Image 1 (cartoon, rainbow, N blue to C red):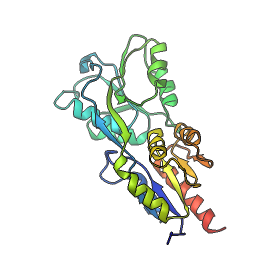
Image 2 (tube, rainbow, N blue to C red):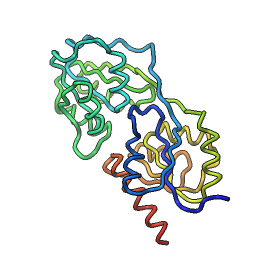
Image 3 (cartoon, helix red, strand yellow):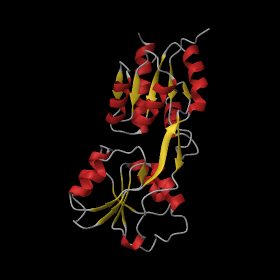
Image 4 (cartoon, rainbow, N blue to C red):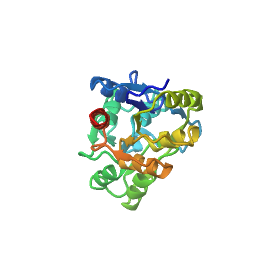
Length: 252
């Protein structure tokens, strides 16, 4: 018999480089019933654009904790501690990841943690001709490198990993949706939205609450009729919005 009590579905990837999923932790701290079914996974790409030597780089830019992780794997054994490279990250969580492997973070956008906000901040900080390296996902948008290129920077943006659908979760997802009548789906990337649509073409009439406007746009385009974007773009705010929504549902 299907369960009627509302529940939050977390779709974040199984390899999102943390021992304990931060979104699940935030939801549990708010006493939100949660089910984590990872719909995407990441893997390093063996072939990519060459990365300049550390001494040749002026700025190193990370747009996700995954980018930090795979960059560390790729550059293992290389000496970065004595260089003058400056580091920018898209948000505080990515900054924490960069700091955890020894980098001092010089620039993080305030309040809005998007590629657009990061581009604006870097645009005011870099000088024409400076070399900016942006290790990224194969699926990453070109907003940031294009903006910096137009500002005269020497941009190197190697795709060092890719995100793909974790199709092994298809059965678990179908079973979960068939046994739960009520809930909310969380998305933290467009890739997770696309994976959900691939595994479940007939979308449930559940709301999709997303970590940012880009992911929310992907959810709307996929066919979800009720889509919200948490702001600021953090796991804590996403969890709070989910909690508030479920409280509203329970009070109806």
